[in-house]
Image 1 (cartoon, one colour):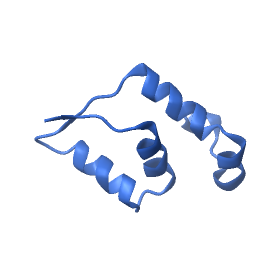
Image 2 (image 1 turned 90 degrees about the vertical axis):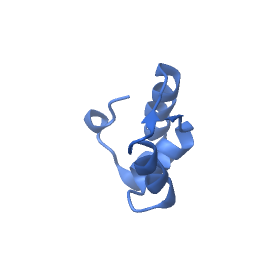
Image 3 (image 1 turned 180 degrees about the vertical axis):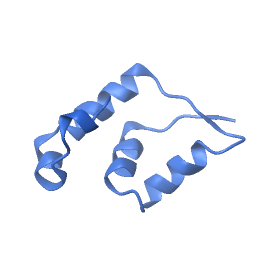
Image 4 (image 1 turned 135 degrees about the vertical axis):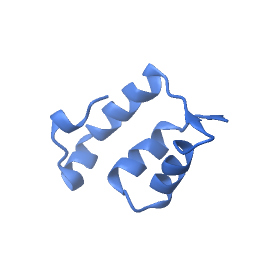
Length: 67
């Protein structure tokens, strides 16, 4: 089954690897599922991870944000 995740789910999964969003992401990349993403979703994730309020709490280096 093809699955897509909203940018919010992807951001939450990145910030909280033991959380519910990460569990959903892990399920969506496990067979028989195939995760389908668009450049638009990936762009939104990259922008969200660079938001000042996110950077204030998580201080993610730009090199780690690949989107």
